[in-house]
View 1: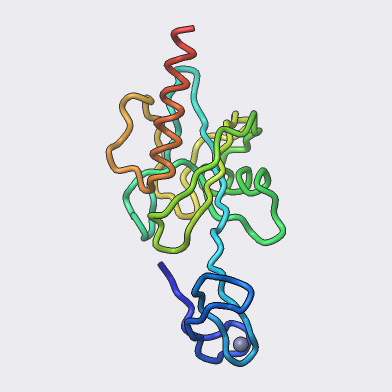
View 2 (view 1 turned 90 degrees about the vertical axis):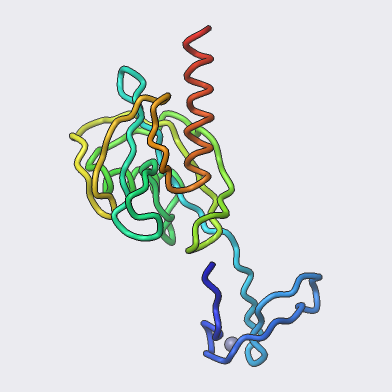
Length: 174
Ligand SMILES: [Zn+2]
């Protein structure tokens, strides 16, 4: 996990200290009082299934986890809402314009080396476009929900996919 060494406000070296109103040790700037809370970063993405129930995954082009598969997703930009982020990331990575049908679930992710992540996944449908890998995705493919690749990049994406599989099967039965 990335750690700040210097204060992002005044460039003084940070120290480990418990701020006076807290009980946790944090990285604190001894000069200007900046506290690095290391808050989780929101990421948003989509589950898109075709008529046969196959799920669209993208292969990561860059580290971390280059070559592994994920749902179309990415980090939320400043000033962006989660729905806007999911739609933008999907367009960038897949070339598809999507409509978000509903919130699927929200996940805690601890295995991304860049940040602690809160992953927000929507069920989405394609409005227009043909799948074309873009941005940090090298390849796109629809996979049967019961025959997913073994190398799913992040635990939060694996969890979303297994919950989706469970939901898919319960709907087939009912
Ligand atoms: Zn400072």
